[in-house]
Amino acid sequence: MEELKIIEWSENWSIDNDIFYFVIFLDKNDNFVGKGIVEYKGEDKKNLYCSLYHVYVNEKYRGQGYFRQLIEKCLEDIKKKEYNIVGLYAKKELITIYEEYGFEFNGKMNSDKTEYSGYLNYNDDEE
Image (cartoon, rainbow, N blue to C red):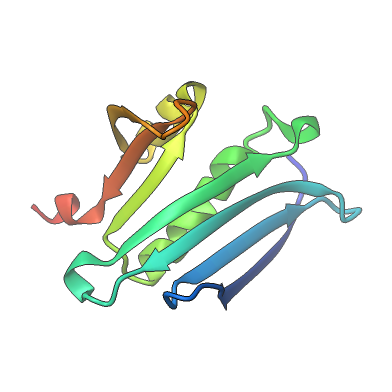
């Protein structure tokens, strides 16, 4: 696996003061490898909630572990910010990968029936 350039930044992009964290992976020639986005919500320290969105790897780079690296980079930022609950929607074929990171899926789907609803609760680790 080649060394990647990692570009990260955060922005306040919404009317509700949600903060978005962006991570982009580029190869040594600055070609797009993949991306991930986290939307942070909540003010209550006990119930800080965020959503993991748009984790995507360019077809040319699939099967090389970059998807897992993107998930890990996003979860690293989430833990650093001390958010407790992470929500996401995932395609059926990606559920087992997310489960390796502790995500649970309940069979519910998004409104267009293309992805399954899942969550990760770091509060469960404390019990």
